[in-house]
Structure formats: C-alpha cells, structure tokens
Length: 358
Image (cartoon, rainbow, N blue to C red):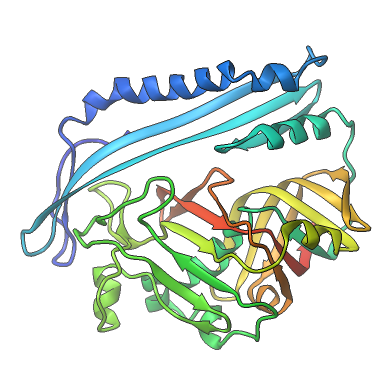
C-alpha cells in the first residue's frame, strides 16, 4: 500500500496526493480478498475437480487494492480518481509437480484442464529451435505489451530509435494493437499529471498509428498528452506507461486455428516478459504449454524460454480469432524501478515463427 503524502516535482510534474483516508480501506481490502477466496470455495469448483485426488494441494493468493487519489496539474486544477483492482493466482501441487493458474472470471474449464495436465505425469522437454505457436485467448496480449507498447512509449522514443519506427512488414491478417487505460485492472480515468486518459490506437496493420505520451514527452513532440503519465508514488518521476494493451479480435474461428495447425506448441500461460525495444526482440518464460500434433493438443511441455521478434510477429501472424479475452493472466510491469498493475487482452492467435531457447 503506497505511503501518504505530497510533493512538488519539476515544472512539468504534478502534485500527487494519496487519499488521507487510505488507511480506512485496509479492512475492506482484506474483506474483499477473503470474500473472493470464500466465494470460490463455496462454488465447489475445487471439490468437484479434485474428487479422487486427495493428495492434490492448492494455494490461492489474492491481491486487492482500492485507492482514491487527488492530482493537481501545473495550473492548479484539481482532479480525482479511484483505482481498484483484484487478481488471484492458484497454485496446484501433486508430489514434486506443480501447476499455476491465473484466476479469471470463469475458471472452471481452466481448472479442470490444469488438474488433468498435472496428474498426467512428467512433461516433455521441448528441443531448442524455431516452431509455430498458437496462443490461447488473452495470452498474446503480453507480446503486444512488450514488443509494441514499450517501443511506443514517449520517453523511450526520446532516448533512442526503436525497432518499430523503422517500418513494419506487411501483415498476413489485419492486425491492430490498442492501449486503453480506462479499462482492465487498475484502470484510470485521470493520470498522475491530472490529464484525462484516452484510448490510443498504437498500430494499424503495417503502420504506427499512435504513441503513449505524458506531458514531457508530448511537449517534445509538439503534441498533447494522451493521459498515460503514471508513477508508483509521489516520490517517483512520471513516465508514459501502458494501461490495458490489447490485440483487436479477428475473423478466424478459435477452434479452427488449432485444428488447422499440423504441428507446434499451444501456449496457455507465460510470465517474466522482457524486451529490447531497439532490436524488437522479446523473451518470456512459458510455464504452461502443450505440444500440437495433427491439429490437437497432446503432450504437456516443461517450462521453456520463448523468444519472439517484432518483424516475425507481423509477417507470420496468420490467424486471429474472434474470441478477444482480457486479463487472462496476472499482470504487472516494472519500468525504471516503478511497478504498475497493467492489463492485456488478445484473441487466440497463431504465429508461424517463435524461437525456443531452452
């Protein structure tokens, strides 16, 4: 929970005041987290799913927050905002094996599938090299966050030329990436400089369509802030930050995307995204994936490091599903030592080229 207080930064910074009554929210926050856990218990999801598997252990971690803020812009205009979020992570264990599920609104299918793969026994190790990958609905939003969002943050563009400014290859499918801080977990309608947030279309097929700007980076481009200026506390400098970054839905049937894939991997969960915005290379740890053989998921795979390149994403993304899903994975982003809760979204997509490093 952030500390209370206020500070005045440089001329283009703002006064950021955390709610003086924030301490009063501690009990409701704890109550909300307990209510989430208890509701999940009462629904009987665990009992039904683990019937016959008494040796299956589980741990549910719930994080919730509710924050009221007031922000004064450089002209002294005062605005307020309320930011709240709740996320949960379920860890299943069976002997020496474990499996983690990011808890979403309708988790029944994911839970049953996770338990089925957990009790199936040892996983297969994937050999290094390149392969095709189908990403479950919601997951590919992490790729958009790392490869697109970070390459179009205003302060990053001020310091160096990013890969995406060099021009994009022709897309196989209409491919649009957008960031809207007004939606998803920890949404904000007013940023930490007192600017109203708005949605920004970042890419539209094979062209850059917009940038994420705070007051400082906007002034450098002779433009207006997009309301993406955020900081972790009043002690930190403002940076342009992503809110909810997502890939627009396409026209392909999600089930057909898998059934028409002869071989590759089906990615269900990945974490620890890292990007080189100059080279356009991002890496992730894939913690949950299955081998695809003849159009269906077969053997569960051991965790592996996956690398994707921006130009390969544009030139080999050949299927985009209709099933846009938000917040299918627990998300936070750290930039310059400042953590921020973020959201992502995506439909089921297929990339023709990913690299398995280990």
